[in-house]
Image 1 (cartoon, helix red, strand yellow):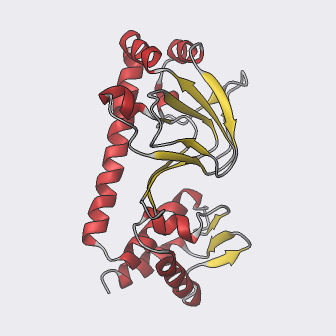
Image 2 (cartoon, rainbow, N blue to C red):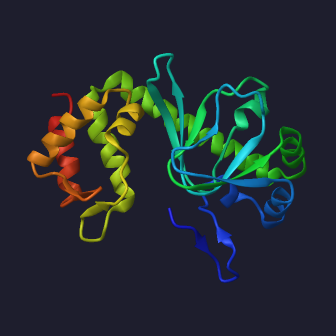
Length: 236
């Protein structure tokens, strides 16, 4: 996701993220406490096994929040873009980290200690409310995914997730060009299935003319057709 700037060349985070919701003085207070670092694509930013309880803010790039089984199988929980935070669970309840975070692209991440973060929450009510909203959004997303896993077959989950991923890239003419879609393995981890199932579903969608490959990207000739296609196949 490309960063947006205002007339004063200040970064403008999306209003549905924590950094996009706080007041300017709160953001300045937050900046005065953090240290930032850069991470390359694929690099581990936060390890579920580590003992720290810092809060991290994503300033540039995107990350995936996931866990790994004893056999190395990945289960992805969510992806986060600029302006979001992660690691806040450990600050709130004092428990160990619940997941690992991996860079999906080159990233810049700011780190704030748990003590400083609690102090900012106490001093700035707007930040407290922004954090609560961020937590509710994450909870709703996980609730939806658990419901999908319980109620839907793997093929339906794959197609629905592709629809959700493609929708932000919808153009006025009804087409979609998704330049950097997740890999088949990444999509499989996100919908709790295997890469072979994802390959099979995508292969069938290509054969049926619903999606096309454009280099690394996905091209959707008609997003309405894609949604109608899913409704016709749902539960089959």
